[in-house]
Image (cartoon, rainbow, N blue to C red; front, side):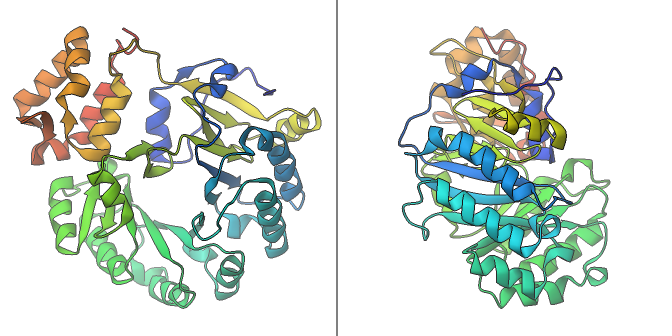
Length: 390
């Protein structure tokens, strides 16, 4: 795989969850992106679309897809998402062209089992645009809302009523709450729950002034038949993610919670974030360098990174973080040897036990109610562990 790289090796996050992942990544050679991928494992495709994409953008993306397609031609595509604001950044004809070309390059065994989703904001959702996306076989959308502005000032109800008429399989709501207050957040939650999103994400809760604790929010949401996943997601009861959690088949990714057999996440487009095996990469966000790389038949990768290497059978801290976020308890067989071999980790876990964030339950270290309220802090401390390569 030929890759065009730039001297500046920094990841630029699109969201809070991406920023958290980038904290723990260290630079790695591009060759690492090839490792630990199996030819039959499913993969996801994320196409990033800038707010003001030009008319030539679909053609540029299709050229990048042509370069990357040979690597994944035998793997089934199970997730296809248009990221950022595709309805804002592209005209209907351009979107149609982009989706058509992207679909033609990959192995989609059954369109009914492949998840087709798009991200959007409230101003993007009109009946005409929703009809377009439904016609292009999209069955899911994620709506990002600035929760600092109350619902009655954003025409929320009328827009969601219109969206409901198109019978999307499910929709997700991402509430940006860092600039709001508890009363407005409660108002938003009541309004949003009325329209039954499958997933509600609270982005920026740790930065919200006078915010309710996560454990109290969890109890309130439980009364509304939503269960807490990780440190920000509330999932409606009966959702497939909860069954996967029960079977311990989840992973925490920059794109949310997902099935753990989804190893490769192909990111295409300006500033796109992707993952091959255990390595992450990000494309350049410069249209000049993006076009130049494609003209030279090279992938427009700006930087690459991975979690630090570790020695078997040690369990790396980033996997401990994954277990805590996905399941809340950590199995002792997963971490006992690791903790014993790493004094820094041992101190962190002992402090968590002393503070009452964790308790021992049979073969597990389980988060307490107090631990849920400090989950993000504890995971941040684990990710900062200096002995990840012991």
